[in-house]
Length: 213
Image (cartoon, rainbow, N blue to C red):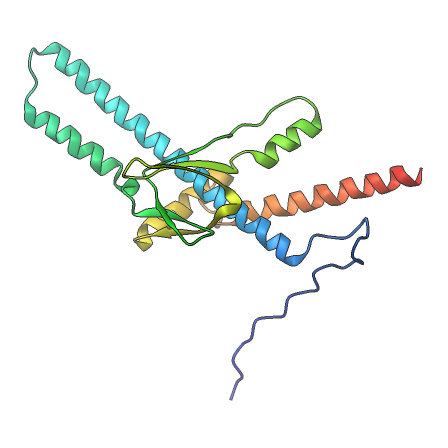
């Protein structure tokens, strides 16, 4: 009788003595960074998705307004159809998707916006710093018009009322992050983590060499 598979034990947190200049981040810290990258990928994608839907709605409303200007009066039934169309376009933002905070509170999403979503030029240090903090704080409006502002580290989960909504979000997030529909969800978050650890290792090595000189 085969024994059930057991998860492999985690590797030691640090390969180098504590306090060493070359000490690598602990396993738990790496997992935390990876989780924050995943959430940043998901929420940024969600914000982009909503912005595209709003653009689509505005385009439709502009066409309706142009049509209304051509006629003196517009059929009320057409206005009702517009309202129904808008509701259907934004149906994923009716609270069926939500974040879960570190305190276990579910915050339903009607609108979401990253407060700093750009890179800043200048020195390499400035660019790196802007990349570190961009899309790490999100402002969320609920269906009841409450507004919350959360740093990414206070978000401990993402909840969707349907599996389809979650699958669509993951697919959109993967495509937005990589530009390809074939990239698995979470891959961009992992490569971001790997790049961050590599950059940190190079910085520590340069600093160590400078000290020796």
